Each structure stands twice: as structure tokens, then as C-alpha cells.
Image (cartoon, rainbow, N blue to C red; front, side):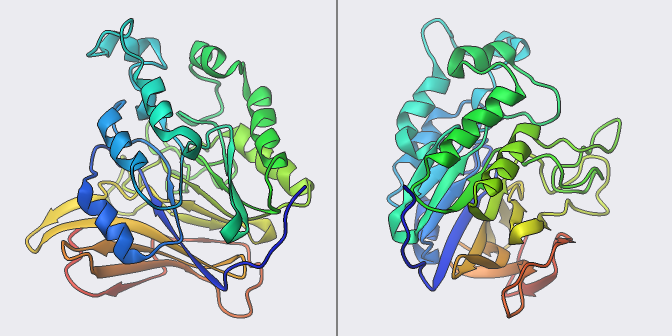
Length: 326
């Protein structure tokens, strides 16, 4: 049975977008300075980058993780297998990552956080996105799943087993239905330009979970980088606000670590919840002393905290505290 208790008055969630090998010990120190109550990592740590995942698994902070398509880069597709730089008959680096993460990997599962009065539910792990079911043998062998309908049922089962009525959903790719323009959160930015590249099973699972009476204040994902392939004139829209006050965040600000004249800068997306409702989302850049030197506020919900469906651009405003260097 779902449990009920009070939310923390204010909750801070750090979301890490696609890492792509840009992770080191300083990231753990930066997270400690940020003082997040919960860390969500949406995958693509590298091309089956076991050592990066090992470092993330060792973080001593409440966290949930979902692995992305690059985390099965040499194992999910025939093309990837042909490129594999190691002997797959002797090593299973996908399983090594899963073993390292243990219960913190929420793909097709859930993780309860009683002190926060919420459950994190994972969508389909290793997703490439789109409306075509890809990597058939990989999903059949790993999960016994043969298509979108079975995938939706697996995600929904995790939501039904949640110990709390408030759920945060996380995927590697986001759900279908957030727009079909190339700059939309899951919009296709390669030829032919345009089209919704979100995951239909993710969308169906969210809708069916809401029908159960659950509350979903936040859905986080990555995969579709903010920098677009077909143009450098605009950036991808990172935030969409839907029905039921659900806020959707694409956290894939890539590269997440950059070198500037003033030193290294690394980014985190910070989500603030007040009484279980998302009140603000910002992308922050941290310097080598672990201070916030730049903050881009993508979403701010004015009081009273009420639903207001909308889509927001890359930044609603930007507060420059120093050299951003991104």
C-alpha cells in the first residue's frame, strides 16, 4: 500500500545529463557543495564506460540512475557489435554496469525514498528513442520484452509497486508527445528534419500511471542534446510543462564539462520542489572551487503553485555570476 507522510518543505534535486566520459572526482565534491537531497543521472556515461559507472556507483548520496544507448553501445545492435573493441564472449560490460549500480539502476524498476515521500520510477533503459522498436534481440534477451506494449506494461508495473503516491519518472530518452519541431525536447534534429523522437512506451506508462491516481510532478531525461545538429542559431527547448502540473526536463546540456580561460566549468540541472510541486528549474555551472558562477533559470512557477501548461525556451532568463564559458 502507498505510504503517506509530509514532504520536506523544500527539496533540491540535482539532475545530471549525458556524461559522455566527462566525470571525475570533482563532480562528487561539487554535488556535496550543492547540497542536493537527491541525484538523478539519466545515462550515456560513455561507450560502455564501466569505470565511469563505477565512480558514480560509489557516490555517497541518495541517487537513481538509468542507463542510456551509449551504455550498451557495443552490445545492443549488430552495428555496435561489429565495432566492439573487446571480446564480448569473455566480457559483458552492460552487465558489469548493472551490477555496479545495483538497486540504484531504475530502468524498468523503481526506488523508494521514504524520507522524501516519493518514488523514482524508471522507463525503458538503453533507449535510442523513436517510434520504431529497435534492438529486438537485446531487449528480448535482457528483459524478455518484445515491443512497446510489453515495455509499457513493465514500466507501469514498477509504478504500481511504488510505496508512495508521488512519483518522479526518469528515462534516457524522453516520452513521445512533447512536440515534433527539431528544437522541441525530443524533436528530431537530423535529416529529414523534424518529427517527435520520444519513446511511446514512456508516454503510455505516464498516462496510465496518472489514471491510477498517482501524482507525477517531474519527468527527467536526456539523450537529445541541447545543441542542435542542423543549426547553431537556437538551442533545444529543455522544459515542457504538461497537464496535471507535470514538468518535463531534458537535462542533456552537452558537453557538461568545459574548459574556459578561467578554468574548468561543469553543469548540473537543479530542480526545486516545494510541497511536492516543481517551483524552479535552473542549469548551474560550477567552477573549480565548487561555486556557482552562472545560473540559467529555465522554469519558475509563480505563487500560488498551480498548474499552467506551457513550453519554455532554452532559458527564461540568465543570471551571470561569473564566466560561464559554455
